[in-house]
Amino acid sequence: MTDHRDSAAGDKSARFVQRLSRAETGPLALACLAYLAVISVFFTVFPGVDLAATGLFHQAGDGFPLASQPFFLRLRELGPFLVKLIAGSCVAILLFAFLTGRTPKGLRLRTPLFLLSTLVIGPGLVVNALFKNNWGRPRPNAVDAFGGDAPYVPVWRITDHCDTNCSFVSGEASSSLWLIALAFVAPPAWRKPVLVAVLPLVIALSANRVAFGGHFLSDTLIAWGLTLLVIVAVHHLLYRMDLMERQAPALRAAYLRAGTCVRLAISAAYNNASRALGRFIETMR
Image (cartoon, rainbow, N blue to C red; front, side, top):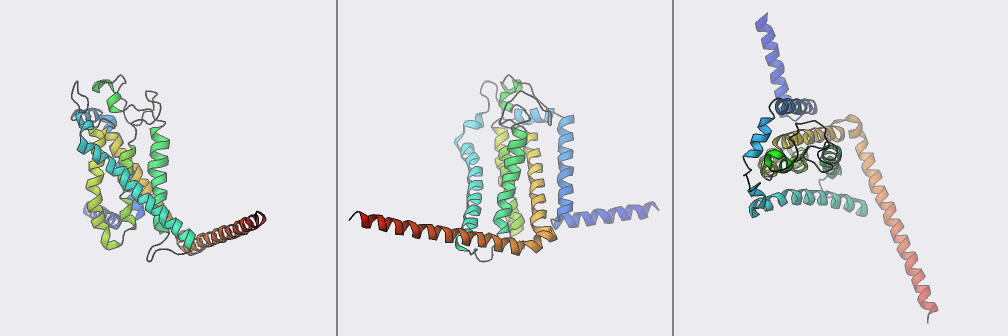
């Protein structure tokens, strides 16, 4: 009886892993929630790990030396540059479709919509607006253990030791993890190469913030989980729900029609203005 139960449990686990490897929404969401729970409990029980990780980059009297090294400063700039480049490209695609009534060949409007919405909701609203501006966790370089005057505050504890743009959670770790959203919209053959290229960059950019004394390790790891959870949820909404799949052609047509109306209105306004200007010039002769 025990062997039968163990076999059934093993089959369920194998099926779950298979579904997870296929990036199915349900298993991915459960994995994100489990990850957040494990990380949160770990750093609550072992807060010394946070301090030890930061201590690796801190020198008494010198603070965080890597924060002034040109290479690491340039590395920090790379993350925001890539985010702005991708977001700007998405906005350009949507504007192009709106103003011309056409979309680039082989590209669905849901792709830029998915990337922009996950960026706004994840790093924008959830991480920066909700957590960083309300949780009050002081950054490592402001904590007394590293030369500051604020106490160390464990994860998930709301305090008033920081007013805004605080340590919990890491905005730059969140925006760097957001780059993984590219793998969700890449053609199947490109998904693994995208992940292979992006994941080392995510780790490097996030570790850079810990090395600078800008965030604790827990800030970074929890930011990853929250951002990935947002990406999975939005992907399910836009790509996996039957209602959205059925409504997608009608929504695309409505978006392009709205662009046509705007173009016609702009053209009519331009023509009216040109005629009015011509009549004014005639009166001045």
